[in-house]
Image 1 (cartoon, rainbow, N blue to C red):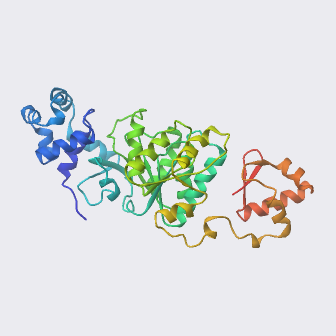
Image 2 (tube, one colour; image 1 turned 45 degrees about the horizontal axis):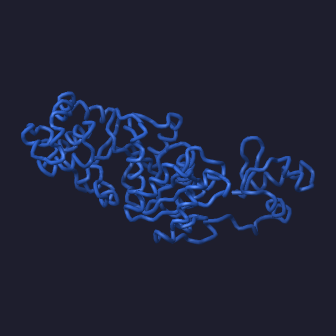
Length: 365
């Protein structure tokens, strides 16, 4: 595997620490001056010849004077954060296809599987129970098919997708809108460590970068860029997930959407995507067939074979919806004794046909 000279990464990281440069200007610098070290050390008169920097040379000189490249590199090593540059063979292949890919990526975890087929699963942070269940199930099914799950580690849909992949020994990638010395949201610190153990956490932002709102649209282009397709599970009419879908279209990748309740604001974004031509998704089979990954069987991507159930279990299962239903309502609908219903519910849960949620609610899965 080709390895990039460490000096190149040291000075590429230093350039990335300059607040206003960004991928386009860093790329222009290196194209003109050949190496990251020469770009970092270049005198102002050389920088004036680069069209993208003509109005910024004074500001660049000021910021450059405040940054110690070796000290920044030492901090990365102390935090066990690794880097890969766009000219290295272990840089994600799909990202190289972007118009202006990030010149450097920071990561924790293992990126050796980053080029296996991947699908982005994104959606609302304030997801409904239905949305989180669907995201989790899709991630489970894709993990079982050997497809990676990419998302942004936000609350709601992102979290459900990452967990679905991890729980089935799948490979998952979380793309952050901040430096990797931050965990955002903070309550997902445990999830972040699980992803590091079972996949990778990536960012194009240097250490010290806070999770500011304007960073997330930039982050979203990486989520879609790493993926053969993007599936939106729940989204309001102005959701950031629609930005990810727009990036996927620009990158000539597939776009999928999960239909929802017509009265829910969290369905409006998805329904708009479907009206505009996105592929409607009911199971991972709908996604896998579009990205040319064949599931081993349709049954594996829906529910277990109901032939394993007793007649009593089948009858009760038919009464339980995919939305949570309280146990008292189930007992009332069934017309049987509470003890008998509880026994059958336990059996259905052990056979993975239903799931119990907090408050003694049950739903089909």
